[in-house]
Image (cartoon, rainbow, N blue to C red; front, side, top):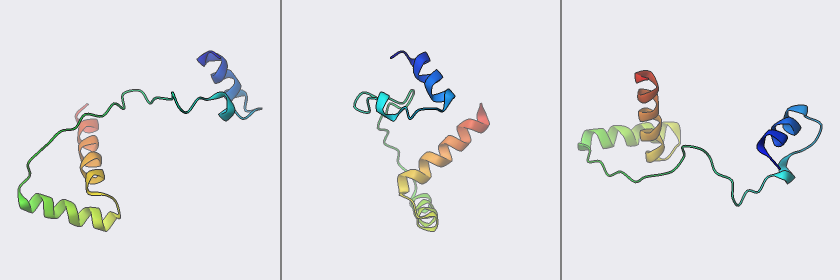
Length: 75
């Protein structure tokens, strides 16, 4: 099925399109991952850890959200 056909079916809202999707080959555009190592001063790591605990999320999530917010503002 072409993407345009799937879009039309979805937009019509008459049928469930989940069965038309192949989750094994699904990909999210611009979501490739590349590992980056960064050294932070101890005070930054401690502050980030406090914020992660406060929010109930993983340490890495805090960093990703903060950087994403900054990049969106810079655009």
